[in-house]
Amino acid sequence: MPEPGSARALLAQGDFRRFWASRIAGTAAGQMLMVALGWQMYALTGSAWDLGLVGLVQFAPALLLALPAGHHVDGSNRQRVLLAVLGVQCAVAACLAWASWQGWMGRSALLAASLALGALRTWQMPASQALLPQLVPREQLPRALALSSAALQGAIIAGPALGGLVYAGGAQAVYGLSALCFAAAGLCVAGIRSRPAATQREPLSWATLLAGLHFIRTRPVVLGAVSLDLFAVLLGGATALLPLFARDLLHTEAWGLGLLRSAPAVGALLMSLVLVRWPVQRRSGAWLLGAVAVYGLTMVVFGLSTSLWLSMAALAASGAADMVSVVIRQSLVQLATPDDMRGRVSAVNSVFIGASNQLGEFESGATAAWLGPVASVVSGGVGTMMVVLLWAGLFPALARHDRLSQRADQDEGKIN
Image (cartoon, rainbow, N blue to C red; front, side, top):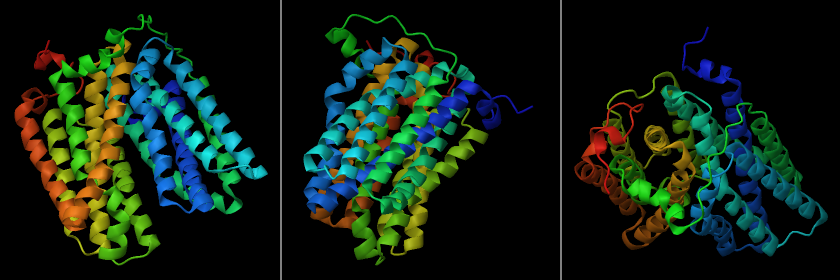
C-alpha cells in the first residue's frame, strides 16, 4: 500500500485524481489559447500595442470582479462554479475555432474573447483554490498543493509548445484542441463524487464583499505571506526583459529565448516533485523567507551572467525557490482561512498575484530604460532580499511560524 499522504496515496483518491487531471487539462488549454490569441493578433495587426492589449484586457476584469466573484464562490457549490467556468471557456474556444475557420476573426473579436477569458478566470482561481481543501484531509493539504502545482507547471511547459506545433494547422486547430481540453477538464470536475456542499450565502453588502480584505489585514501571518510575494515579484521579476537579455546580452536567437522562458517552469516543476516527497513540515515561516531571499539572489546572478547556460541555471533556481514560496504561502493561507471565507480570500490573493506580475513587468521596463537592463535586474534582486529582511522584522509571527498544519492565528494574534 502507498504511504499515507504520498503522491501515490493522493492520486489513489478518486476525487483528488479527477481534480488533478482537470488542472492539467484546463491549464494546458488556457496556455494554448494564449499562444493562439497572441500569434493571431500579431498576424492580423502587426502591432506590438495590440499584442500588449491582449494581456491587459485579461487582467482588467480581475480588478473589477474579484470581490464579487469571491463572494459568489463562498456562497455556492465550488464544484459547480468551476464546472460552469470550464464549460463557458470551452464554448469561447469553440467559437474562436469556428470564426477562424470561416475567416471572420478580427482585432475586436480577439480583444472581446480575451476580455471574456479574463473575466472567467476571476471565478476560476478562487473556485479551484477553495475546492481543493474540501477534497483532501487537512494534514495532506501541503502535499496536495505541491502535487497540484506540479500539474500546473507541467501544463505551463507543455501547453505553449503543443499550441505552437498545432498552430501549423491554423489558429482554428489550436482553438479546437483547447476546446477539447476544456471539455475534458470539465468532465473530470463533473466526476468528483464528494459533492462538497455550498455554504450559506451571506447577503451582498460592502461588509461581505470586503470580508476577504479584512480577513487578510487582521492576520499578520497571512498578510505577511501574501504581501511578501507581491513585493518579491514586483521587484525581482525579469520576464519582461528576457527578449532583451537573449538578443543583446547573451547573443542568442529565438531558440535561446525559448529556453530562458521555460527554465523557471522546469525548476518549479522539479521542486514541486521534491516537495511532494519531502514537504516542509517545520519552521515554515523561516523556509518561506529563505526561499524568497534565494529568489532575489538568483535574479542577481541572472542579471550579471553573460552565459546562456548560467542564465538558464539561475532562472531554473529562481523557479525552484518560487515554488517553495508558492506552496508554503498557499498552505498558510488555505489552512488559516475558514472554509466559508476561502473564495473571498483566494479572490483577493489572485488580485495580489496579478498586480505583482503586471506591475512587475512595468517596473522592469521602466527601470531598464532608466538604469539599463543589468542594473534593473540586479537592483530588483537586491531589493527583494532587502524586503525579506524588512518583512522578518515587520511580521515576526510569520518568521517564527512553525508547522503548516497549525492554524496561523494560534501564534500570531489577530489585529482588530
